[in-house]
Image 1 (spheres, rainbow, N blue to C red):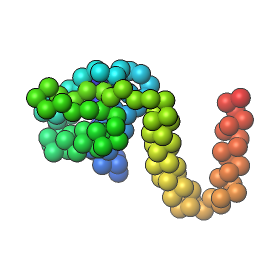
Image 2: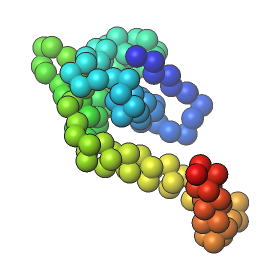
Image 3: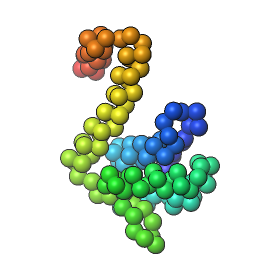
Image 4: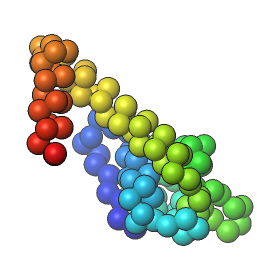
Length: 125
């Protein structure tokens, strides 16, 4: 499993870990039932606190992405299509919030933002 954190990002490290694991699950790189590295091993590999990794894993479990079996470890949950879509929408909302704040800071109007979004959707067709 390839998780990389940036100590220079404004996104908290636990959230970086959480988001990357979610993406690995949602893209199918991590399959249902597959085990995640232990919290200690993940913390050691990423050179972060065990508390940081624990928080990421707890958030993932709260969202239903992973399941923790005490004494056995953490495993990818069997997530249905609706749950995956809900998680994707929530991740998109988080990213859009950052983009909207940035757009407002740059003085880009809502209409200009919508036009850019429309143009980007047209390119993908």
